[in-house]
Image (cartoon, rainbow, N blue to C red; front, side, top):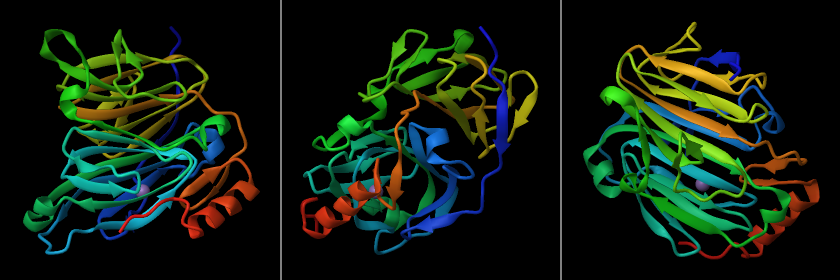
Length: 289
Ligand code: MN
């Protein structure tokens, strides 16, 4: 076991709104290239934010995606969604939606109706996972993963758990099906709890502190809402919760292919982006009111 050192601890950048329902800090690509962060090409973090009651649900109206997967992880509040493949549902606290846009989909993402009417704290992550070229044009797929379906590794002495959304931690497998090797966990730790995470050294590896504060590798304090990117110089890192904490952990095998990205389309070449716009305008992404 060789400790993986920290490349950067990043404070949340100034937030911006996506539609009128998501007030997000962009950590990926952030100051980096998508190639460096591969397979993760975007991470928007809606840190905990109170939305007052509203009569019309806030959110993002109908828009397309092609060439990758969107993963929505809900911590506070509820999001309702509909897509052109006929899927719809509500992502509630602890739930994860793993949508493979692949060849193309239209969807809309809104605050759930009752949540909108009552208002409340909203906290959410949206992560985009790239697809290798050979999977970019497969039919869309959709995994609605409710909290009760997510298996957890339990730390000794009731010190917390590691919920494995995708990948593997200490023998516990994630329920999400992925196209490349992706590890995505929520570590829910009591104050004083410690855990070590081990991934292939070349994997892109980072963490986001959702709640509480932690210490990384026995030396570096990381406050809430901060992001840590690790170097590719070791296989393991250690976290210790200084108080009750929730930490999102991401590690994935880089996809070493060219990236051409424009807005909601992430392909390999410029001409594939032009094709995506043509197909979108020709109605080939389906219909959604
Ligand atoms: Mn979307």
